[in-house]
Image (cartoon, rainbow over all chains, first blue to last red; front, side):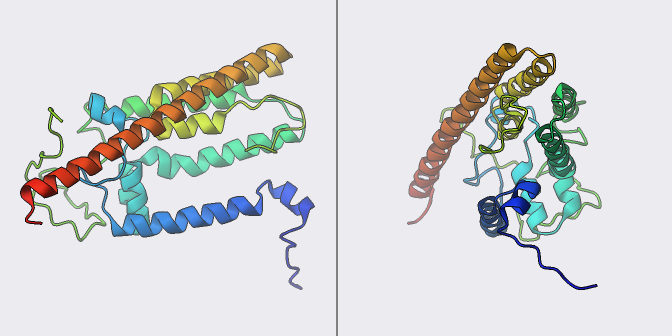
Length: 177
Length: 95
């Protein structure tokens, strides 16, 4: 079967795939920089990474909590740890993206809009949000693993350079800051 | 993404942006955005063009406010952390 190269710059082809080359370049750049930064610096309580304001304010995990740690785990190839840190992002993210892209294609082909899709997403995000904090933000299976849990069981983390003692190091959050 | 308006002319419902805002920690506004996205779609399907457009304006408002707020607060916190780190280094470190 002869190989027919895809004309990448063909406008018709571009329209069909719905993604402009500039977006692909941008995505590749973000991935490369993210990969480098995440492998170089560890997201921890003391790091300079942006932290979840919602978590810091309420002590509850929001749907996005653990996303940075999940991406770092992915950068180290530890898919299970990534899922443990944010299952909705790692497992649900690609599915959500695929469903939205499919719906957008349908609409541009003249199909109906889909409030059901929006409502389903609303339900999923809200349910995930609740489930991450039940029975408690520390013991929920969907919450990010606690860095200082007394025994992580068989869970070996992908952060082999992490040599923090299991003590409560809380000089990070002075209440009088 | 601009330039990707569906041919049917449905106003942008900001669903993707709302989800991104929800994930990037301005939670309540992001979820409100998803609800407005649902409104845009259902009104559009019902033939209520004006309603869909006004819901779309709301969706845009909430998503943009959520994004702006999240960005500003994150930058503020980031700045504070840098200052705190410098302060800690000056106090405890032997630099």
